[in-house]
Image (cartoon, rainbow over all chains, first blue to last red; front, side, top):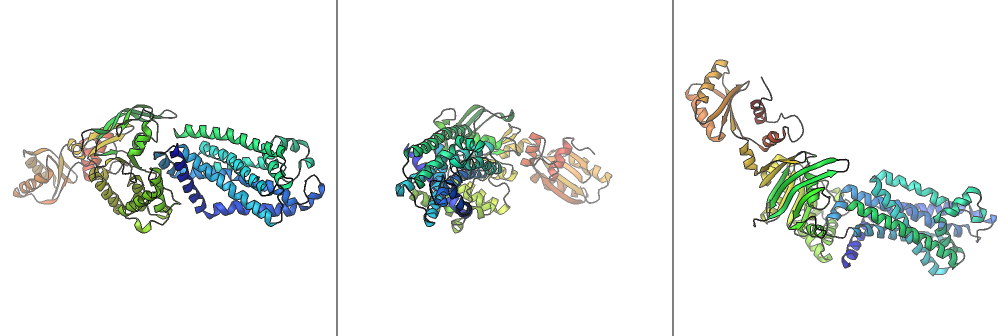
Length: 255
Length: 341
Protein backbone atom coordinates (compact mmCIF):
# COMPACT_ATOMS: atom_id res chain seq x y z
CA UNK A 1 0.00 0.00 0.00
CA UNK A 2 3.04 2.25 0.22
CA UNK A 3 2.73 2.60 -3.53
CA UNK A 4 -0.67 4.18 -3.57
CA UNK A 5 0.47 6.93 -1.20
CA UNK A 6 3.37 8.05 -3.34
CA UNK A 7 1.29 7.64 -6.48
CA UNK A 8 -1.46 9.77 -4.99
CA UNK A 9 1.08 12.35 -3.99
CA UNK A 10 2.59 12.48 -7.49
CA UNK A 11 -0.81 12.98 -8.99
CA UNK A 12 -1.67 15.55 -6.35
CA UNK A 13 1.43 17.57 -7.20
CA UNK A 14 0.70 17.44 -10.87
CA UNK A 15 -2.94 18.45 -10.34
CA UNK A 16 -1.92 21.32 -8.09
CA UNK A 17 0.48 22.49 -10.77
CA UNK A 18 -2.31 22.35 -13.30
CA UNK A 19 -4.65 24.26 -11.02
CA UNK A 20 -2.09 26.91 -10.10
CA UNK A 21 -0.94 27.09 -13.72
CA UNK A 22 -4.07 29.03 -14.62
CA UNK A 23 -4.07 32.11 -12.41
CA UNK A 24 -7.76 32.74 -13.08
CA UNK A 25 -8.55 29.41 -11.37
CA UNK A 26 -7.02 30.74 -8.20
CA UNK A 27 -7.93 34.38 -8.32
CA UNK A 28 -11.58 34.17 -9.40
CA UNK A 29 -12.97 32.31 -6.37
CA UNK A 30 -10.89 34.39 -4.00
CA UNK A 31 -12.09 37.56 -5.63
CA UNK A 32 -15.73 36.45 -5.48
CA UNK A 33 -15.43 35.55 -1.81
CA UNK A 34 -13.89 38.89 -0.97
CA UNK A 35 -16.49 40.70 -3.02
CA UNK A 36 -19.43 38.87 -1.45
CA UNK A 37 -18.01 39.42 1.98
CA UNK A 38 -17.67 43.14 1.50
CA UNK A 39 -20.92 43.63 -0.46
CA UNK A 40 -23.22 41.61 1.77
CA UNK A 41 -21.39 42.78 4.86
CA UNK A 42 -22.11 46.38 3.99
CA UNK A 43 -25.55 45.80 2.47
CA UNK A 44 -27.03 44.06 5.50
CA UNK A 45 -24.98 45.80 8.17
CA UNK A 46 -28.03 47.41 9.77
CA UNK A 47 -30.13 44.23 9.88
CA UNK A 48 -28.20 43.37 13.02
CA UNK A 49 -30.68 45.59 14.88
CA UNK A 50 -33.43 43.04 14.16
CA UNK A 51 -31.87 40.93 16.86
CA UNK A 52 -31.18 37.22 17.19
CA UNK A 53 -27.83 37.31 15.40
CA UNK A 54 -25.83 36.67 18.54
CA UNK A 55 -23.43 39.44 17.61
CA UNK A 56 -23.30 43.14 17.00
CA UNK A 57 -21.02 42.68 13.97
CA UNK A 58 -22.85 41.55 10.87
CA UNK A 59 -19.58 40.69 9.14
CA UNK A 60 -18.78 38.20 11.87
CA UNK A 61 -22.20 36.65 11.27
CA UNK A 62 -21.47 36.41 7.57
CA UNK A 63 -18.07 34.68 7.78
CA UNK A 64 -19.44 31.14 8.06
CA UNK A 65 -21.63 31.54 5.00
CA UNK A 66 -18.84 33.01 2.90
CA UNK A 67 -16.64 30.04 3.71
CA UNK A 68 -19.42 27.56 2.98
CA UNK A 69 -20.40 29.07 -0.33
CA UNK A 70 -16.85 29.19 -1.63
CA UNK A 71 -16.11 25.57 -0.78
CA UNK A 72 -19.47 24.37 -2.12
CA UNK A 73 -19.10 26.18 -5.42
CA UNK A 74 -15.57 24.96 -5.91
CA UNK A 75 -16.93 21.40 -5.88
CA UNK A 76 -17.60 21.62 -9.60
CA UNK A 77 -13.97 22.65 -10.18
CA UNK A 78 -12.80 19.21 -9.13
CA UNK A 79 -15.18 17.54 -11.52
CA UNK A 80 -14.17 19.96 -14.22
CA UNK A 81 -10.46 19.34 -13.71
CA UNK A 82 -10.98 15.59 -13.95
CA UNK A 83 -13.10 16.03 -17.03
CA UNK A 84 -10.43 18.12 -18.74
CA UNK A 85 -8.01 15.25 -18.25
CA UNK A 86 -10.53 12.75 -19.52
CA UNK A 87 -11.19 14.82 -22.62
CA UNK A 88 -7.54 15.52 -23.37
CA UNK A 89 -6.75 11.83 -23.04
CA UNK A 90 -4.36 12.45 -20.18
CA UNK A 91 -6.63 10.45 -17.93
CA UNK A 92 -6.05 7.42 -20.19
CA UNK A 93 -2.36 8.05 -19.91
CA UNK A 94 -2.67 7.86 -16.14
CA UNK A 95 -4.74 4.68 -16.38
CA UNK A 96 -2.05 3.15 -18.59
CA UNK A 97 0.56 3.57 -15.91
CA UNK A 98 1.14 0.68 -13.53
CA UNK A 99 -0.47 2.51 -10.63
CA UNK A 100 -3.54 1.95 -8.50
CA UNK A 101 -6.29 3.75 -10.36
CA UNK A 102 -7.74 5.11 -7.14
CA UNK A 103 -4.65 7.21 -6.66
CA UNK A 104 -5.94 9.30 -9.56
CA UNK A 105 -9.23 9.88 -7.74
CA UNK A 106 -7.56 10.53 -4.40
CA UNK A 107 -5.02 12.87 -5.95
CA UNK A 108 -7.90 14.84 -7.43
CA UNK A 109 -9.72 14.95 -4.08
CA UNK A 110 -6.60 16.09 -2.28
CA UNK A 111 -6.44 19.08 -4.57
CA UNK A 112 -10.05 19.82 -3.68
CA UNK A 113 -9.16 19.70 0.00
CA UNK A 114 -6.19 21.99 -0.50
CA UNK A 115 -8.27 24.39 -2.50
CA UNK A 116 -10.99 24.48 0.17
CA UNK A 117 -8.33 25.12 2.78
CA UNK A 118 -6.76 28.00 0.87
CA UNK A 119 -10.11 29.55 0.08
CA UNK A 120 -11.32 29.32 3.66
CA UNK A 121 -8.00 30.72 4.82
CA UNK A 122 -8.41 33.78 2.62
CA UNK A 123 -11.91 34.39 4.02
CA UNK A 124 -10.59 34.10 7.56
CA UNK A 125 -7.76 36.50 6.75
CA UNK A 126 -10.23 38.95 5.28
CA UNK A 127 -12.44 38.65 8.35
CA UNK A 128 -9.51 39.30 10.65
CA UNK A 129 -8.57 42.30 8.54
CA UNK A 130 -11.99 43.90 9.03
CA UNK A 131 -11.82 43.26 12.75
CA UNK A 132 -13.83 40.07 13.21
CA UNK A 133 -12.97 38.50 16.54
CA UNK A 134 -13.14 34.68 16.43
CA UNK A 135 -14.72 33.59 19.70
CA UNK A 136 -13.18 30.12 19.77
CA UNK A 137 -9.75 31.55 19.25
CA UNK A 138 -6.99 30.18 17.08
CA UNK A 139 -8.02 26.58 17.70
CA UNK A 140 -11.52 27.52 16.67
CA UNK A 141 -10.18 28.94 13.43
CA UNK A 142 -8.23 25.74 12.81
CA UNK A 143 -11.33 23.68 13.52
CA UNK A 144 -13.31 25.82 11.08
CA UNK A 145 -10.68 25.32 8.41
CA UNK A 146 -10.75 21.57 8.98
CA UNK A 147 -14.52 21.55 8.68
CA UNK A 148 -14.25 23.62 5.51
CA UNK A 149 -11.89 21.01 4.02
CA UNK A 150 -14.21 18.18 5.02
CA UNK A 151 -17.18 19.95 3.50
CA UNK A 152 -15.24 20.93 0.41
CA UNK A 153 -14.56 17.25 -0.20
CA UNK A 154 -18.29 16.51 0.03
CA UNK A 155 -19.07 18.85 -2.85
CA UNK A 156 -16.02 17.77 -4.81
CA UNK A 157 -17.36 14.23 -4.73
CA UNK A 158 -20.61 15.56 -6.16
CA UNK A 159 -18.72 17.52 -8.80
CA UNK A 160 -16.70 14.47 -9.78
CA UNK A 161 -19.79 12.31 -9.98
CA UNK A 162 -21.51 14.82 -12.21
CA UNK A 163 -18.42 14.97 -14.43
CA UNK A 164 -18.14 11.18 -14.67
CA UNK A 165 -21.84 10.85 -15.37
CA UNK A 166 -22.23 13.61 -17.95
CA UNK A 167 -18.75 13.54 -19.51
CA UNK A 168 -19.55 17.04 -20.65
CA UNK A 169 -17.74 20.19 -19.61
CA UNK A 170 -20.67 22.53 -19.95
CA UNK A 171 -23.02 20.23 -18.08
CA UNK A 172 -20.48 19.92 -15.30
CA UNK A 173 -20.14 23.66 -14.93
CA UNK A 174 -23.86 24.28 -15.22
CA UNK A 175 -24.55 21.61 -12.63
CA UNK A 176 -23.06 24.05 -10.15
CA UNK A 177 -26.41 25.82 -10.37
CA UNK A 178 -27.93 22.87 -8.54
CA UNK A 179 -25.79 23.87 -5.60
CA UNK A 180 -27.46 27.28 -5.35
CA UNK A 181 -30.50 26.30 -3.30
CA UNK A 182 -28.28 24.43 -0.86
CA UNK A 183 -26.23 27.54 -0.29
CA UNK A 184 -29.05 30.04 -0.06
CA UNK A 185 -31.68 27.94 1.73
CA UNK A 186 -29.71 28.37 4.93
CA UNK A 187 -29.30 30.85 7.70
CA UNK A 188 -27.01 32.64 5.26
CA UNK A 189 -28.02 36.20 5.94
CA UNK A 190 -30.56 35.90 8.74
CA UNK A 191 -30.60 33.92 11.96
CA UNK A 192 -33.17 31.18 12.38
CA UNK A 193 -35.36 33.38 14.60
CA UNK A 194 -35.94 35.77 11.73
CA UNK A 195 -37.05 33.10 9.26
CA UNK A 196 -40.60 31.92 8.72
CA UNK A 197 -42.92 29.77 6.59
CA UNK A 198 -41.63 27.30 4.02
CA UNK A 199 -38.23 28.94 4.04
CA UNK A 200 -37.71 28.17 7.70
CA UNK A 201 -38.71 24.55 7.05
CA UNK A 202 -36.37 24.25 4.06
CA UNK A 203 -33.51 25.67 6.09
CA UNK A 204 -34.12 23.02 8.75
CA UNK A 205 -34.00 20.23 6.16
CA UNK A 206 -30.92 21.53 4.36
CA UNK A 207 -27.80 19.81 5.76
CA UNK A 208 -25.66 22.77 4.74
CA UNK A 209 -27.34 24.82 7.48
CA UNK A 210 -25.86 22.60 10.18
CA UNK A 211 -22.33 22.74 8.89
CA UNK A 212 -22.55 26.47 8.54
CA UNK A 213 -24.01 26.87 12.03
CA UNK A 214 -21.09 24.91 13.47
CA UNK A 215 -18.68 27.36 11.89
CA UNK A 216 -20.81 30.25 13.01
CA UNK A 217 -20.85 29.33 16.69
CA UNK A 218 -17.10 28.99 16.60
CA UNK A 219 -16.91 32.48 15.16
CA UNK A 220 -19.48 34.10 17.43
CA UNK A 221 -19.87 32.06 20.60
CA UNK A 222 -16.93 29.76 21.12
CA UNK A 223 -16.93 26.02 21.81
CA UNK A 224 -20.62 25.16 21.72
CA UNK A 225 -20.07 21.46 21.41
CA UNK A 226 -23.63 20.46 20.53
CA UNK A 227 -23.82 22.64 17.45
CA UNK A 228 -20.25 21.88 16.46
CA UNK A 229 -20.71 18.13 16.71
CA UNK A 230 -23.91 18.26 14.71
CA UNK A 231 -22.08 20.14 11.96
CA UNK A 232 -19.16 17.72 11.96
CA UNK A 233 -21.49 14.73 11.94
CA UNK A 234 -23.49 16.09 9.04
CA UNK A 235 -20.38 16.91 7.00
CA UNK A 236 -18.68 13.63 7.92
CA UNK A 237 -21.80 11.59 7.18
CA UNK A 238 -22.29 13.26 3.81
CA UNK A 239 -18.66 12.68 2.96
CA UNK A 240 -18.84 9.02 3.88
CA UNK A 241 -21.89 8.46 1.68
CA UNK A 242 -20.68 10.52 -1.26
CA UNK A 243 -17.15 9.18 -1.16
CA UNK A 244 -18.52 5.65 -1.30
CA UNK A 245 -20.80 6.60 -4.19
CA UNK A 246 -18.00 8.36 -6.05
CA UNK A 247 -15.62 5.47 -5.56
CA UNK A 248 -18.25 3.04 -6.78
CA UNK A 249 -18.98 5.11 -9.84
CA UNK A 250 -15.30 5.62 -10.55
CA UNK A 251 -14.61 1.91 -10.23
CA UNK A 252 -17.39 1.13 -12.67
CA UNK A 253 -16.21 3.66 -15.21
CA UNK A 254 -12.53 2.84 -15.16
CA UNK A 255 -12.76 -0.95 -15.06
CA UNK B 1 15.31 -12.47 -31.26
CA UNK B 2 13.21 -15.29 -29.96
CA UNK B 3 10.54 -17.11 -31.86
CA UNK B 4 8.04 -16.62 -29.09
CA UNK B 5 5.01 -14.52 -29.66
CA UNK B 6 5.01 -11.58 -27.34
CA UNK B 7 1.43 -10.75 -28.28
CA UNK B 8 -1.12 -13.46 -28.89
CA UNK B 9 -4.74 -12.71 -29.76
CA UNK B 10 -7.43 -15.29 -30.33
CA UNK B 11 -11.02 -14.75 -31.41
CA UNK B 12 -11.04 -11.30 -29.92
CA UNK B 13 -14.52 -9.80 -29.88
CA UNK B 14 -15.55 -6.37 -28.70
CA UNK B 15 -19.15 -5.27 -28.62
CA UNK B 16 -19.77 -1.76 -27.40
CA UNK B 17 -22.94 -0.87 -25.52
CA UNK B 18 -25.83 -0.62 -27.95
CA UNK B 19 -24.73 -3.80 -29.74
CA UNK B 20 -22.12 -1.98 -31.79
CA UNK B 21 -19.71 -4.67 -32.87
CA UNK B 22 -16.23 -3.19 -33.15
CA UNK B 23 -14.29 -6.43 -33.42
CA UNK B 24 -15.81 -9.63 -34.67
CA UNK B 25 -13.32 -12.28 -33.72
CA UNK B 26 -9.81 -11.35 -34.77
CA UNK B 27 -6.72 -13.55 -34.52
CA UNK B 28 -3.14 -12.46 -34.79
CA UNK B 29 0.19 -12.72 -33.09
CA UNK B 30 3.28 -10.57 -32.90
CA UNK B 31 6.73 -12.03 -32.48
CA UNK B 32 9.26 -10.75 -30.02
CA UNK B 33 11.06 -7.76 -31.51
CA UNK B 34 8.77 -7.60 -34.49
CA UNK B 35 7.41 -4.42 -36.06
CA UNK B 36 3.77 -5.21 -36.66
CA UNK B 37 1.22 -2.93 -38.25
CA UNK B 38 -2.51 -2.64 -38.31
CA UNK B 39 -3.64 -0.96 -41.45
CA UNK B 40 -7.21 0.16 -41.83
CA UNK B 41 -9.57 3.09 -42.23
CA UNK B 42 -11.21 5.02 -39.41
CA UNK B 43 -13.59 2.88 -37.44
CA UNK B 44 -12.06 -0.39 -38.62
CA UNK B 45 -11.29 -1.51 -35.08
CA UNK B 46 -7.59 -0.64 -34.88
CA UNK B 47 -7.85 1.61 -31.85
CA UNK B 48 -10.25 -0.76 -30.14
CA UNK B 49 -7.77 -3.59 -30.52
CA UNK B 50 -4.81 -1.64 -29.26
CA UNK B 51 -6.82 -0.29 -26.31
CA UNK B 52 -7.86 -3.79 -25.28
CA UNK B 53 -4.28 -5.01 -25.52
CA UNK B 54 -3.08 -2.14 -23.37
CA UNK B 55 -5.75 -2.79 -20.69
CA UNK B 56 -7.56 0.49 -21.32
CA UNK B 57 -10.65 -1.25 -22.63
CA UNK B 58 -12.37 -4.47 -21.61
CA UNK B 59 -12.81 -7.14 -24.22
CA UNK B 60 -16.14 -8.85 -24.73
CA UNK B 61 -14.61 -12.27 -25.36
CA UNK B 62 -11.55 -14.01 -26.70
CA UNK B 63 -8.05 -14.73 -25.49
CA UNK B 64 -5.35 -12.11 -25.21
CA UNK B 65 -1.85 -12.44 -23.89
CA UNK B 66 0.62 -9.59 -23.84
CA UNK B 67 4.25 -9.89 -22.76
CA UNK B 68 3.50 -13.35 -21.45
CA UNK B 69 0.57 -12.28 -19.28
CA UNK B 70 -2.94 -13.54 -19.85
CA UNK B 71 -5.40 -10.65 -19.80
CA UNK B 72 -7.98 -12.81 -18.04
CA UNK B 73 -5.90 -13.09 -14.89
CA UNK B 74 -6.56 -10.27 -12.49
CA UNK B 75 -2.91 -9.72 -11.66
CA UNK B 76 -2.00 -9.33 -15.31
CA UNK B 77 -3.14 -5.83 -16.11
CA UNK B 78 -0.62 -4.19 -13.80
CA UNK B 79 2.18 -6.35 -15.23
CA UNK B 80 1.12 -5.67 -18.78
CA UNK B 81 1.05 -1.94 -18.10
CA UNK B 82 4.60 -2.09 -16.76
CA UNK B 83 5.76 -3.87 -19.90
CA UNK B 84 4.20 -1.56 -22.47
CA UNK B 85 4.48 2.01 -23.62
CA UNK B 86 1.62 3.64 -25.47
CA UNK B 87 1.62 6.74 -27.63
CA UNK B 88 -1.93 7.62 -28.46
CA UNK B 89 -3.92 8.96 -31.31
CA UNK B 90 -5.79 11.57 -29.32
CA UNK B 91 -2.45 12.55 -27.89
CA UNK B 92 -3.10 12.37 -24.16
CA UNK B 93 -0.89 15.24 -23.25
CA UNK B 94 -0.89 17.54 -20.32
CA UNK B 95 -1.04 20.92 -22.03
CA UNK B 96 -0.45 22.94 -18.90
CA UNK B 97 2.74 21.09 -17.99
CA UNK B 98 6.10 21.87 -19.48
CA UNK B 99 7.67 19.15 -21.60
CA UNK B 100 10.08 18.48 -18.77
CA UNK B 101 7.39 18.25 -16.11
CA UNK B 102 5.33 15.96 -18.30
CA UNK B 103 8.21 13.52 -18.69
CA UNK B 104 9.19 13.65 -15.03
CA UNK B 105 5.58 12.86 -14.16
CA UNK B 106 5.65 9.93 -16.57
CA UNK B 107 8.78 8.72 -14.82
CA UNK B 108 7.13 8.93 -11.41
CA UNK B 109 4.09 7.08 -12.71
CA UNK B 110 6.40 4.31 -13.84
CA UNK B 111 8.01 4.04 -10.42
CA UNK B 112 11.20 5.95 -10.98
CA UNK B 113 12.51 8.03 -8.13
CA UNK B 114 12.34 11.79 -8.52
CA UNK B 115 16.01 12.17 -9.40
CA UNK B 116 15.95 9.17 -11.71
CA UNK B 117 12.84 10.53 -13.39
CA UNK B 118 14.58 13.82 -13.98
CA UNK B 119 17.64 12.19 -15.52
CA UNK B 120 15.51 9.97 -17.72
CA UNK B 121 13.43 12.97 -18.81
CA UNK B 122 16.58 14.79 -19.87
CA UNK B 123 17.75 11.74 -21.82
CA UNK B 124 14.44 11.45 -23.58
CA UNK B 125 14.22 15.15 -24.41
CA UNK B 126 17.62 14.79 -25.99
CA UNK B 127 16.51 11.68 -27.87
CA UNK B 128 13.48 13.33 -29.45
CA UNK B 129 15.26 16.65 -29.93
CA UNK B 130 13.13 18.74 -27.61
CA UNK B 131 15.76 19.83 -25.10
CA UNK B 132 15.47 23.43 -26.25
CA UNK B 133 11.77 23.61 -25.51
CA UNK B 134 11.81 21.50 -22.35
CA UNK B 135 10.59 24.38 -20.22
CA UNK B 136 7.80 25.46 -22.55
CA UNK B 137 4.26 24.33 -21.89
CA UNK B 138 3.25 21.34 -23.98
CA UNK B 139 0.16 23.27 -25.07
CA UNK B 140 2.40 25.58 -27.11
CA UNK B 141 4.09 22.74 -29.04
CA UNK B 142 3.53 22.12 -32.74
CA UNK B 143 1.83 18.94 -33.92
CA UNK B 144 5.12 17.20 -34.61
CA UNK B 145 6.61 18.22 -31.28
CA UNK B 146 3.53 16.93 -29.48
CA UNK B 147 3.89 13.52 -31.07
CA UNK B 148 7.56 13.45 -30.18
CA UNK B 149 7.03 14.36 -26.54
CA UNK B 150 4.24 11.80 -26.40
CA UNK B 151 6.56 9.17 -27.84
CA UNK B 152 9.21 10.14 -25.30
CA UNK B 153 6.62 9.78 -22.54
CA UNK B 154 5.87 6.26 -23.68
CA UNK B 155 9.54 5.33 -23.40
CA UNK B 156 10.37 6.38 -19.83
CA UNK B 157 10.44 2.82 -18.54
CA UNK B 158 12.18 1.18 -21.51
CA UNK B 159 9.07 -0.81 -22.44
CA UNK B 160 9.39 -4.20 -24.09
CA UNK B 161 6.44 -3.42 -26.30
CA UNK B 162 5.49 -0.10 -27.78
CA UNK B 163 1.93 0.56 -28.89
CA UNK B 164 1.45 3.39 -31.32
CA UNK B 165 -1.98 4.49 -32.35
CA UNK B 166 -1.65 6.42 -35.61
CA UNK B 167 1.55 8.12 -34.54
CA UNK B 168 1.88 10.37 -37.57
CA UNK B 169 -1.68 11.01 -38.71
CA UNK B 170 -2.07 14.68 -39.48
CA UNK B 171 1.62 15.46 -39.44
CA UNK B 172 3.57 17.21 -42.16
CA UNK B 173 5.98 15.00 -44.12
CA UNK B 174 9.07 16.25 -42.34
CA UNK B 175 7.70 15.59 -38.86
CA UNK B 176 6.50 12.23 -40.06
CA UNK B 177 9.98 11.28 -41.19
CA UNK B 178 11.39 12.35 -37.83
CA UNK B 179 8.97 10.04 -36.01
CA UNK B 180 9.75 7.22 -38.42
CA UNK B 181 13.45 7.57 -37.72
CA UNK B 182 12.82 7.26 -34.00
CA UNK B 183 10.66 4.21 -34.52
CA UNK B 184 13.23 2.54 -36.75
CA UNK B 185 15.86 3.16 -34.15
CA UNK B 186 13.72 1.73 -31.34
CA UNK B 187 12.94 -1.30 -33.44
CA UNK B 188 16.63 -1.70 -34.13
CA UNK B 189 17.22 -1.81 -30.39
CA UNK B 190 14.86 -4.75 -30.08
CA UNK B 191 11.62 -3.12 -29.01
CA UNK B 192 8.52 -4.87 -30.25
CA UNK B 193 6.29 -2.33 -31.93
CA UNK B 194 2.60 -2.59 -32.69
CA UNK B 195 1.45 0.31 -34.77
CA UNK B 196 -1.88 1.27 -36.24
CA UNK B 197 -2.03 3.48 -39.26
CA UNK B 198 -4.10 4.50 -42.20
CA UNK B 199 -1.07 5.74 -44.06
CA UNK B 200 0.05 3.18 -46.66
CA UNK B 201 3.54 4.51 -46.91
CA UNK B 202 3.98 4.24 -43.17
CA UNK B 203 2.88 0.62 -43.15
CA UNK B 204 5.05 -0.14 -46.16
CA UNK B 205 8.19 1.56 -44.86
CA UNK B 206 8.12 0.51 -41.26
CA UNK B 207 6.25 -2.71 -40.72
CA UNK B 208 7.73 -6.15 -41.09
CA UNK B 209 4.31 -7.65 -41.04
CA UNK B 210 0.89 -6.17 -41.58
CA UNK B 211 -2.70 -7.00 -40.87
CA UNK B 212 -5.29 -5.19 -42.92
CA UNK B 213 -8.32 -4.63 -40.79
CA UNK B 214 -11.72 -3.58 -41.98
CA UNK B 215 -15.09 -3.60 -40.25
CA UNK B 216 -13.68 -5.35 -37.22
CA UNK B 217 -12.09 -8.16 -39.18
CA UNK B 218 -8.62 -8.95 -40.39
CA UNK B 219 -8.99 -9.30 -44.14
CA UNK B 220 -5.36 -9.91 -45.05
CA UNK B 221 -2.11 -10.52 -43.29
CA UNK B 222 1.50 -10.82 -44.36
CA UNK B 223 4.65 -8.87 -45.08
CA UNK B 224 4.11 -5.76 -47.17
CA UNK B 225 6.05 -7.48 -49.95
CA UNK B 226 4.04 -10.68 -49.94
CA UNK B 227 0.80 -8.75 -49.80
CA UNK B 228 1.83 -6.78 -52.86
CA UNK B 229 3.11 -9.85 -54.64
CA UNK B 230 -0.20 -11.55 -54.08
CA UNK B 231 -1.74 -8.80 -56.10
CA UNK B 232 -0.09 -10.24 -59.17
CA UNK B 233 1.51 -8.56 -62.12
CA UNK B 234 3.21 -5.27 -62.74
CA UNK B 235 1.90 -3.11 -65.51
CA UNK B 236 3.75 -1.43 -68.32
CA UNK B 237 1.84 1.32 -69.97
CA UNK B 238 2.88 2.53 -73.40
CA UNK B 239 1.46 5.42 -75.41
CA UNK B 240 2.35 5.40 -79.07
CA UNK B 241 3.60 8.38 -81.02
CA UNK B 242 0.58 8.34 -83.31
CA UNK B 243 -2.21 6.48 -81.69
CA UNK B 244 -4.25 5.23 -84.59
CA UNK B 245 -6.37 2.16 -84.07
CA UNK B 246 -4.39 0.40 -86.72
CA UNK B 247 -1.06 1.11 -85.07
CA UNK B 248 -2.37 0.18 -81.66
CA UNK B 249 -3.60 -3.14 -83.01
CA UNK B 250 -0.25 -3.83 -84.60
CA UNK B 251 1.62 -3.06 -81.41
CA UNK B 252 -0.79 -5.15 -79.38
CA UNK B 253 -0.26 -8.12 -81.64
CA UNK B 254 3.50 -7.83 -81.35
CA UNK B 255 3.47 -7.45 -77.62
CA UNK B 256 1.04 -10.20 -76.83
CA UNK B 257 3.25 -12.70 -78.69
CA UNK B 258 6.05 -12.24 -76.16
CA UNK B 259 6.50 -15.03 -73.67
CA UNK B 260 7.00 -12.72 -70.70
CA UNK B 261 3.73 -10.87 -71.32
CA UNK B 262 0.83 -12.37 -69.47
CA UNK B 263 -1.87 -10.06 -70.74
CA UNK B 264 -2.39 -6.93 -72.78
CA UNK B 265 -5.10 -4.51 -73.77
CA UNK B 266 -5.63 -1.07 -75.23
CA UNK B 267 -7.36 1.80 -73.54
CA UNK B 268 -7.74 5.47 -74.50
CA UNK B 269 -4.17 6.23 -73.40
CA UNK B 270 -2.49 3.38 -75.20
CA UNK B 271 -1.32 -0.10 -74.39
CA UNK B 272 -1.60 -1.73 -71.00
CA UNK B 273 0.69 -4.73 -70.66
CA UNK B 274 0.71 -7.18 -67.75
CA UNK B 275 4.15 -8.55 -66.91
CA UNK B 276 5.78 -10.28 -63.97
CA UNK B 277 8.67 -7.90 -63.64
CA UNK B 278 7.92 -4.43 -64.91
CA UNK B 279 11.43 -3.02 -64.69
CA UNK B 280 13.03 -5.85 -66.64
CA UNK B 281 10.28 -6.04 -69.23
CA UNK B 282 10.08 -2.36 -70.08
CA UNK B 283 13.37 -2.18 -72.05
CA UNK B 284 12.52 -5.34 -73.93
CA UNK B 285 9.12 -3.99 -74.90
CA UNK B 286 10.69 -0.71 -75.89
CA UNK B 287 13.23 -2.44 -78.10
CA UNK B 288 10.61 -4.66 -79.65
CA UNK B 289 8.40 -1.77 -80.68
CA UNK B 290 11.22 0.42 -81.93
CA UNK B 291 12.62 -2.39 -84.02
CA UNK B 292 9.23 -2.66 -85.63
CA UNK B 293 9.23 1.06 -86.41
CA UNK B 294 6.57 1.94 -83.94
CA UNK B 295 7.23 5.28 -82.33
CA UNK B 296 6.71 5.56 -78.60
CA UNK B 297 5.55 8.73 -76.85
CA UNK B 298 5.42 7.59 -73.24
CA UNK B 299 6.23 4.58 -71.13
CA UNK B 300 5.40 3.99 -67.50
CA UNK B 301 5.85 1.05 -65.19
CA UNK B 302 3.59 0.59 -62.22
CA UNK B 303 3.47 -2.14 -59.66
CA UNK B 304 0.94 -2.98 -57.00
CA UNK B 305 1.05 -0.73 -53.94
CA UNK B 306 -0.51 -1.31 -50.57
CA UNK B 307 -3.32 0.94 -51.73
CA UNK B 308 -4.10 -1.66 -54.32
CA UNK B 309 -3.83 -4.43 -51.77
CA UNK B 310 -6.24 -2.56 -49.57
CA UNK B 311 -8.60 -1.89 -52.41
CA UNK B 312 -8.50 -5.51 -53.37
CA UNK B 313 -9.38 -6.75 -49.90
CA UNK B 314 -11.90 -4.16 -48.85
CA UNK B 315 -13.34 -3.01 -52.15
CA UNK B 316 -12.57 0.61 -51.41
CA UNK B 317 -9.85 3.12 -50.84
CA UNK B 318 -8.53 3.59 -47.33
CA UNK B 319 -9.54 7.23 -47.20
CA UNK B 320 -13.09 6.25 -47.87
CA UNK B 321 -13.31 8.25 -51.09
CA UNK B 322 -13.94 6.73 -54.48
CA UNK B 323 -10.85 5.04 -55.74
CA UNK B 324 -9.49 7.42 -58.31
CA UNK B 325 -5.90 7.54 -57.15
CA UNK B 326 -3.04 6.60 -59.38
CA UNK B 327 -2.92 5.04 -62.76
CA UNK B 328 -2.48 1.58 -61.37
CA UNK B 329 -5.74 1.80 -59.48
CA UNK B 330 -7.54 2.70 -62.64
CA UNK B 331 -6.01 -0.16 -64.50
CA UNK B 332 -6.92 -2.58 -61.77
CA UNK B 333 -10.47 -1.38 -61.81
CA UNK B 334 -10.60 -1.74 -65.53
CA UNK B 335 -9.23 -5.20 -65.43
CA UNK B 336 -11.67 -6.03 -62.69
CA UNK B 337 -14.42 -4.70 -64.89
CA UNK B 338 -15.31 -1.84 -62.60
CA UNK B 339 -15.11 0.72 -65.34
CA UNK B 340 -16.22 -0.20 -68.81
CA UNK B 341 -15.51 1.64 -71.97
